[in-house]
Length: 340
Image 1 (cartoon, one colour):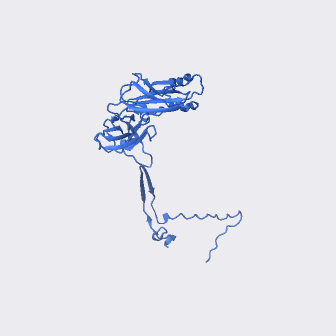
Image 2: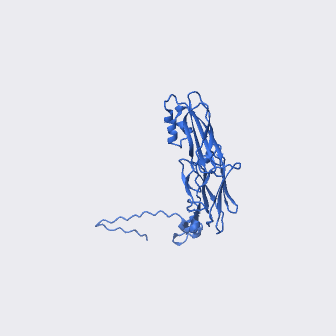
Image 3: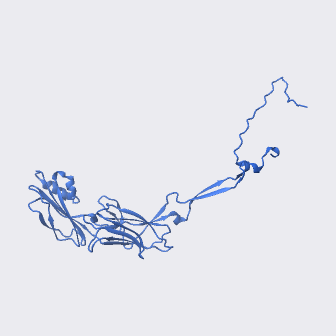
């Protein structure tokens, strides 16, 4: 114990001197990264709005296949024969590959006096109504349908239809529809673009309705550089995969400041002459903000105040202050006794 009642520093409860501490935490990636979106132009392609399904989402696409075109239709046909040779009108469908879909149906009018007014009127007023959907909408007619799809190099001048065999009193209907403009291969070449490091390519792809009819072939999609370096690949099978757009993000290679040239290729898997309706959506490059405007990570700086010896101990509880009693008026003040 030293003079004044102070304990030596070496014998303090802490026993050591706590050094100054500075902790720096770089919180990079703790929050979702933000990107700048760069739309990429294509060589010789103008992006046009397209929907893959009848009521589906529309997006800018490399091309937009034509919709279903009703070439010919008939209803209220007595089922005295089950094979019909129908002549197809010309000029309705553009020249080129076409998917031809023939639908035939047999149904029971159940004693209705004027089936032509009802069924034939429905088919002609709404050409997009297929016989399958008509049968589901009117179950009381007991519609039995037959659908055949064929891929042809051009629209034929005539079609042979086979109606489902029915019983006495049934009538029939048929519809011939076409999906023009099929492709066996679709290639989109993007213009060379210089992109910063750590950028990503966002793409969308899918198959339009013409490529989703029965017996439609699968399609392989891939993205590569113009030098042939593969970056991504995928495959859609209409028999197993649902309709609609597909979205994918791809890590882009570091081009070291040089322009990056890419191409997107869609190819039909099938023998020669097979085609479908693959569509590429307009791609975009996702550039991180830190790559575009300099790295600015979020930094949390923690500092600890240095303390040593008794300063690190918990402060002592202050003693209560007690006031001396005041002397009453007229009374002598007391003095403390002093021993000799």
